[in-house]
Every structure is written in C-alpha cells, then in structure tokens.
Image (cartoon, rainbow over all chains, first blue to last red; front, side):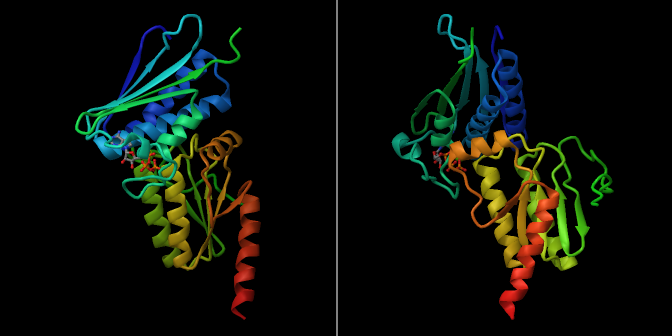
Length: 136
Length: 141
Ligand SMILES: Nc1ncnc2c1ncn2[C@@H]1O[C@H](COP(=O)(O)OP(=O)(O)OP(=O)(O)O)[C@@H](O)[C@H]1O
Ligand SMILES: [Mg+2]
C-alpha cells in the first residue's frame, strides 16, 4: 500500500464499500482476521457518522508515516456541522440523536490511535490508526 | 431438515438492494441474511418481518446473521428494535450465526443484544424457539 485510497461517503451503501475496502487493505498489509474485523467495525462507525450527521464526506486510507512502523491509517473527513463539544461526543452512551452513543468512543477502543478534530460549523476529521504487531 | 437453499427470491434484483429471503417453517419465520447488508436493507428486513409475522401468525423468528462481517452500533440497535417490534406482534426473536470475530468486536464495543435470544446456528435457534414458545404457553395457563 504505497499511496492513499479514497472512498467517498454519501449514502449508507458507501459505508459497506468503505468497510470492504478497509478490510482488503488490512488483509494486504498482513493484519489477522480478528483485527480486520475490528478495523472494519471502526470504519463502519465513523462512516455512518458522516452519513448521519454531515450527509457526505470521505474515508481516506493511508500508510501511516511513522518510520519503519507499519500499519493502517483511516481518516474520516467531512465538511458537515462539526461537533460543538468533543468531550461530550466522546462519552460512551452520549448521542445527540437516538443512537446508542457508541460510535466514537467505540472506534477509539477498537483502534490503537484515535484523534478527532472538529469545530462547530467547520466539519469533522477523525484520524485513527492500527499498528501491525506481528511485523517482523 | 431445513431447506434454505432455494428461497425463491432472485439473488440480485437491483445492484444495491439485497433481499433477505424470509422462509416459513411451522409457526416460525426464518430470515437468512445472504450478503453484507446496508442500513436500508436492515430497515427493510424490519418492516418485512413485522408484516409477515402478522400475515402468518408466526410465534417466533430466526434471523441468521452468519454472513455479516460486522455488527456495529447501528446494526445492534436495529436488531434490538426488530426483536422488540416482533415481541409486540407476539413473536420471539433469536439471532443465530454471529461469527467469533464479530462477537469479539461486539464485546470490545460493549454492544449487547439485550432481550433477544441468541443461538449458535439454525438448528439451535429452532430449539430455542421451541423452548421459548412452550414457556409462553405455560405462562398463559
Ligand atoms: N461527523 C460528525 N459530524 C457532526 N457530529 C458528529 C459527527 N460524528 C459524531 N457526531 C456527534 O457526536 C455524537 C456521538 O457520536 P457517536 O458515533 O459516538 O454516537 P451516535 O452516532 O449518536 O450513536 P451510535 O454511533 O451508537 O449509533 C453524535 O450523536 C453527534 O452529535
Ligand atoms: Mg455514531
């Protein structure tokens, strides 16, 4: 995986595409099945948030630029309404709609690194990484 | 044995619409998810099952999720809603075929299928419903 792969997210169907793309990239990189499923679930959560709260956006897959360390970066980006209170949004069980409030804190649990940048009125970018632990 | 090989529904009607075939078996319904589902497919399944339970007066519903690659917060919420709705329509729901990696991910996410039966496969799902509906009959007496 030398360059980046982008999956535009505009409807619920695209969530499945992003998940499958992430899964196949993870496989290519050498992740195990259980890890591929964790990554796919995290992708599912952040891309669903794009559809639900921003309408459309993009999922970008990249090789993380961290020297020799190998893994997969997943960036979920939208130009939607943004998140006014990130701490609140990251609380397990908090949902501004009728969700379970599991998506963001859950994705953080599933991945190794998780970072969210958002400002009310200025869109949201979630960057998450999973590192290969079995790399020789 | 169960015949789930020929659900009588064309595999691919439209490129993006996956029908979930619903079979009638005794007074149960069996919905076998055939491919990775989108959100819309899950909502469609909810409406279809609710309708069929009334139409066939079914006492129990088995939802086979063997092929699902991920059960995330949305899918969990939808499955819970389906089970709740069907309960109000008089039928018990049992989810069968959750794969080990999918179960592991659900545990990591803290997602539970409260109030819904779960079983390993179709066979055990049927046994679960038999037990469940017998108990319901008993409770009424
Ligand atoms: N991309 C986004 N743009 C704007 N707001 C967002 C975005 N993602 C999350 N949020 C806000 O953060 C809250 C928490 O998100 P999270 O995914 O954790 O839960 P949820 O989507 O409400 O429920 P669940 O994911 O369990 O179905 C959301 O309710 C929403 O208000
Ligand atoms: Mg969410």
